[in-house]
Amino acid sequence: MVFTLLFSLHANAAFSAKESKELALINSQHEAKLIDAEKSFSNSVKEAIDNDPDKKDTILTLKKSWDEFIKAKCDLEVFESKGTDAETAELSNCLVNEYTNAEKYFEHILP
Image 1 (tube, rainbow, N blue to C red):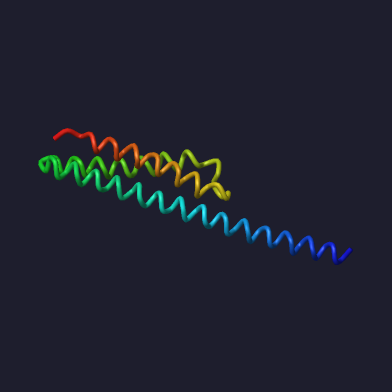
Image 2: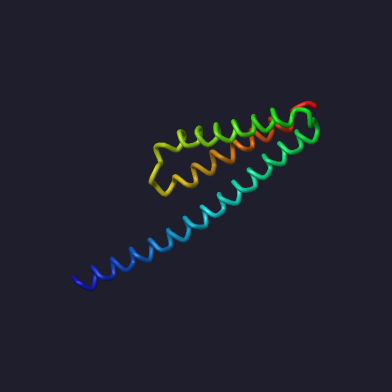
């Protein structure tokens, strides 16, 4: 009986370690996608400014507002998963989608 209990605890610990590694890998992949999305968004803002320097202040104000909106929106969207393993992935997915949408907007600003 003790052997069975020890084996069960050991097997469960190994499974948890495997799960932890998989979760860390998934989170790092999401982080890389988020970094790329944020860079693309910043590049589209820079390009919009380069195309119409007279609107620089207005574009930067809009970017700041958009950043705040995106973060608040995604915080609300992942509220139910706070404190769970899914929180990081869901937050990252939301942020990537929102930054991608914002990037598209800035890419289509006419000079």
